[in-house]
Image (tube, rainbow, N blue to C red):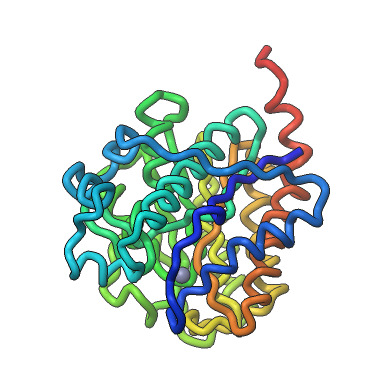
Length: 307
Ligand SMILES: [Zn+2]
């Protein structure tokens, strides 16, 4: 049984007219509940100690105490309510728990996370805390891994992640995203692959495949895959024109490398704002099914005690 962490039980009251489709998280879990190989666990709340491995302590404390100012709250895009605190802690804790589990079981995932627009000392673009950065840093600090790869295929650049790890050669950040989309002031990842508006499957995959092959030629101890599906044609915010098959082909490219190299893998969600939202839900759920297809054989060898 594959464990996936969730945090959709912490519900944020967004009010009518908010453009963020909060219901997608619960719908993705419901979709995956129909697949027998998954078991679901609530994301544990991450500790303040783990958060400040990456984030500025003053920012973390202001958030935890509900003291972010109006401009900080506006930049995040969610109301400053108690539910946002518990949900954010559970999302980061879920990614960290999935990362620890992946070291034993080969891969695990979180049905949340991928909040890659969160910087060290501020949040942005629906992202409060950078779950992947916190999880990666926690494993590195505890000497559980030495080199980390972050593959971010959300249609928006992983700018917070890139900035957090810009001076850290032990973490390689790869981001493939739309050139003319948020964030409009880009950060520098270790590798940025940019696409023009309207890019379709062929153009996307023929650029992504050789780039991934080159990235995965390096040695890593763990891979975090931010698998945002907002590159879908029906996405309201994505500006690319990928089909559901194209997204699946993209996922397979990543998982084939992971399986070949036999390294632990953590899968997180990311953006997804399709109209209808079911397009996002179907594509995102499919990512986790494809991960299990590609990586289930590998996990058996991780579970065995080392010789
Ligand atoms: Zn996005």
